[in-house]
Amino acid sequence: MGKKFGNKVIEFNKGLIYTGSLPPGFQVLNPYLDNPETIKVMREFYKKYYADENRRKFIIGINPSRHGAGITGVPFTDTKRLHSICGIEMVTAYTHEVSSVFVYEMIEQFGGAEMFFNDFYINSPFPLAIIRQGKNGKWVNANYYDDLQLYESVKLFMMESLREHISLGLDTDEVYVLGKKNARFIAMMNEEANLFKSIIVLEHPRFIQQYKFKDKQLYIDKYLQAFNPGGQL
Image (cartoon, rainbow, N blue to C red; front, side, top):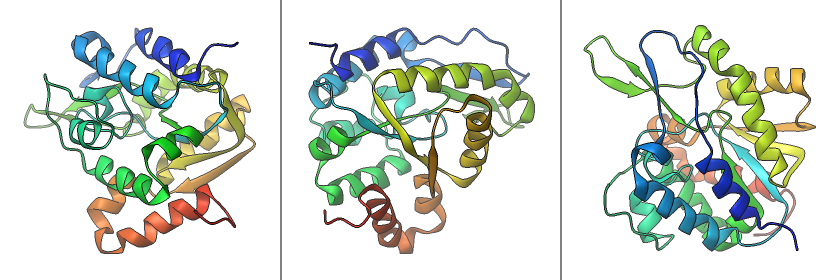
């Protein structure tokens, strides 16, 4: 018997630490160091849905937000959906994240969390939250590609992170990348490191929720078609 997929993810997350440099005005948040309950609920999630050795398809986000995986340790999962859909309660935080709303509506139409997570694994090339200081002094979410110097600072860490994700037991024939700009950077890294055979690009959940909300069902259908081409869900 090999090691279960979920246990490998738990070990990966518990070992996450970013020690590289960052441009002025940027910080990395590590929820596994900042809140002991994050490790607890993250462990519950992966033991619940990934307690097997199945090979899974890889869905690649950008980097966690402060209100999603930056709190729960589970990509695109805020505390509301972690509790209401996954049955895992977090008592030290309460968060709502718009991307999480879209992702879990799509998961429900796919057939539910158990069916979806049996086939798919979601994470990001930079698996920790990045924040930047705005002009008013407040810290806000940042994407790894928002600043070229930031991207160059974290690029090697991201490429190694993607290799480690693949080693968990992921299908590399085709991957699903969320966000068109994200996909351009993933394609550049892929050209350099030869990680994936094919990249399928889907609009990012936050973009859909913020700018295409009235067409949300069309995008859910697009996701479902991409995840199950030619098949019936």
